[in-house]
Image 1: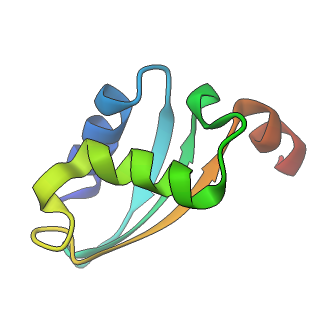
Image 2: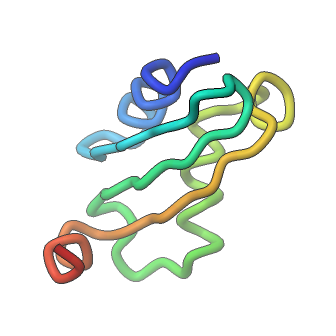
Length: 79
């Protein structure tokens, strides 16, 4: 598994989302995902939305994924 594949899956699964994914060992990854679909949702719900885009890869090819999820407005504030 590689960062670019995860980025593509997240961005395809959450239309309009922007994902920045890193991870050099092929099983542990970090992602910052910005999507307007996160508006009004708690962090757990946001994470579930991202996990849904990755399906069975979670816990398999992707051993761990540390997530930071933000709306575009939140991302703009955090700079």
